[in-house]
Image (tube, rainbow, N blue to C red; front, side):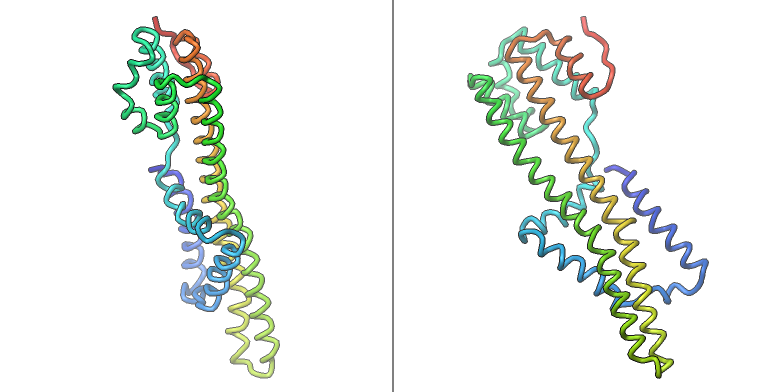
Length: 254
């Protein structure tokens, strides 16, 4: 679990809550019609932009924003370097006994090693991997797009709520008791929209985008390692190449 996301989003809401409590009555900031307008309206309008399955997958990916953490770069480089050393000493077929371990680490990596062990040519492996990566990238990009759309729509529906509240207020100018509720809807919906977009949807979208970029990078790293192993690249050279791509320093092994 990445505590940074929890601290960031939780801290933003905490600061807002503290300012509300210090400034006056918290109950003044609770308005059920405003919640329906911003949350319900924003979610419904976002659904109209995506197939139902994609939308549900995007919304439920919120758990990934809190649970995902980036892979360890050095651990990955050492793992792939050891893999290359093993193949160089014992041959490609030596990987077959550990195929389950590779699948546990990454599904696509397991597929690549399975194809390597089965004797497929490098171009055949490349074609399959590129297709798989493109599919993974599309799925992850859709999840990001759902949250980016919500970040756009929450403030928009906040403005719609403001207009509704102003209309209700103007219609009842001769009734002072109706001015307060109308003004509350007008102001609170804008507040709800701004909070949900900036303190919630935008951070979630940003974290999912980081996850997508990292996942795609590591999928490509795995293929470069498989390519190097198939070509018989020196494990130390392979480690150095991967370290450059991941922006870390590694010690050359004897």
